[in-house]
Image 1 (cartoon, rainbow, N blue to C red):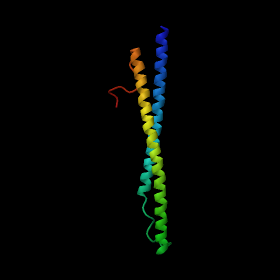
Image 2 (cartoon, rainbow, N blue to C red):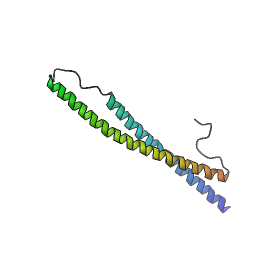
Image 3 (cartoon, helix red, strand yellow):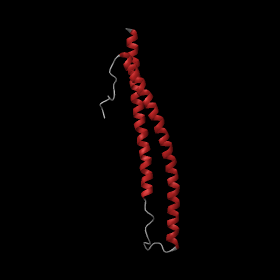
Length: 122
């Protein structure tokens, strides 16, 4: 009986770890999506407005050049951030899969129906 209780505690612990990993995975997915949106916003920025009277000729060209330089640097920063966040997401996804698998295995050893998503859930 003590062995069954220990296995039940192990199952609870495995499920808690699985739940924690899923939360971590969701947060890293949200962070990755945020970086993707930042890159999309940057890519959607238009060039500086056409001659609005404030700038003339060469000044407007210089402003356009500076804007493009800023945008290129910012794109590089965001792409680096996005790469880090994608790598973290993949690492978290693997960790969540392992934790979920462990929780399923312990639940099956106990002969219980595992908590969490079922095969028919979407």
